[in-house]
Length: 262
Image 1 (tube, rainbow, N blue to C red):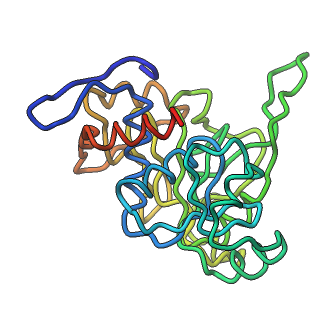
Image 2 (cartoon, rainbow, N blue to C red):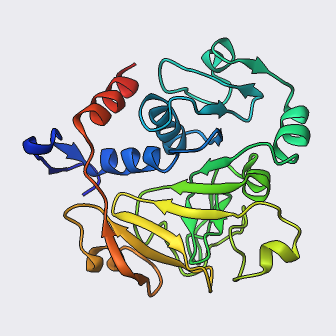
């Protein structure tokens, strides 16, 4: 379902779209109302740049390389992409970015991806255990993600939904989400709320307010609960009032496709 066309609705101004586009549009919508976003490269960067063109035009994009208020005309290739600095309102040193802006609690939202996520939204981007007799798969590592997850006002996550990514137990805790349940973040002195939503190509998961365990709260159009459970490595619970996300509008799809084409 990741690359296939999922729907069309000419009466509401929407057009054919893929499940990836559905995920990216919903990830951008999740930034509505945010003032600033610490952006991860990849899907988070796509969502954040789309949000600045659609859901939240005043959004200040902040990248780990020290750029504040970047306005790239295309998707950046990395945090070192020159256009991030060229279009920024300001460029600060990396120590200032982390010590003053991030650890000082001055950034609303952190947007992260992941290789593995567990039921408490803990993230692995370090290493994958491939089983007995096989070498480990090395991943890019932590980068600034642990500090982002600890200190931003809240954290959003975006990744494709499969049992390879949504696992019962992650192979390495790179970045803490909600630890092993309620109270873990406060006990460790983490000021931010932590992950508040995980947007995927099948739906949206949010932490239960009582247990901090991720539960399915929203399905994308055409997706069933059974599909999501089949793609999840633990016994996924659903919210009592399960919602369906709105399909992308024609304007959102046009903005997204222009962003990717640039």
